Length: 378
Image (tube, rainbow, N blue to C red; front, side, top):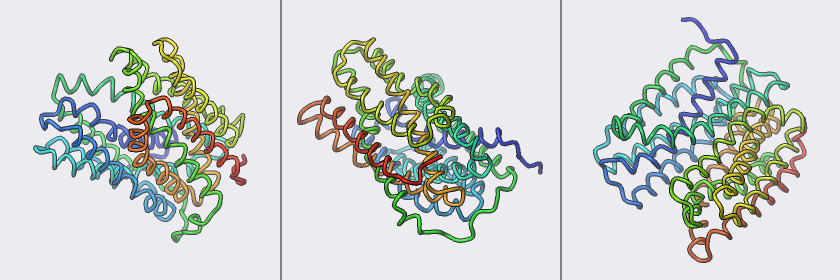
């Protein structure tokens, strides 16, 4: 069997596996409207929560194991699992089975991020690493964009089950291709739990938790907010999509930005700009102004994401990248379980505006946390 050794192909496969995991997280948000299972809002919330719960609980073991065993085997097993879980979603004949499938999708997709980031750090030298991470990060905006652009059309033309079957087939192909990859550099021989006590890791983790409280609030409630200020459904959808579309450009150039400014400055600057644009978002009402502000938010959001990845590789070093990325992503994803009820409570009591102001304040607090990470220098 021929081995895949080209670094660009390896980077593309790592990004593709991350894309599938993120895409599978978003899919039910669209496909639920077309499902023959007739889910209620309560059913939808349980399905989303189960995915998040499964995804979050495996971040620590995924990161720790990525530093001990070849990452390609972890990703391959994860993609086989995603294929099976997606297939189960497609054949589900009851909402209870769909709930189980959502949990299984989360618990398998959750094993992708730490080992793929570890693989990239092993394959790319330091001077090329931030650029590689930028291209890897394209999976985020691409997943959001394709979820809205493709899934409604597929559901209407071939049925709501077929997107799950397609994801299952693509996942199987990716799983097989990962097994064909060349050998990585040797990982450390034993689990290193010292990262759990590292001050810099804790600062990065807590900062991510705080920052992502605002990220998730925006992602989950922005569309409803746009409707509430008078935009039509189509206009609201366009503005919401701009949160991802602008990310294509910033992800492409994020590597150059990080190299020029340094990881610390790129991260803090993008987070502060994200905070400022969120404040503007809370006061805007016209379609055009909201569209422009959404583009600014998306642009800086998708500089912050690869900057956080780059920070994990610096804080952990090549030997501990998997462990650090697993720990920090655990906190980032765990905030997704906290943000929805908190944001909903504020919205119900006093409206959307305070949610955006709170999100901006949280981002500033996160920037302060990041500024205290002493090892984050390039």
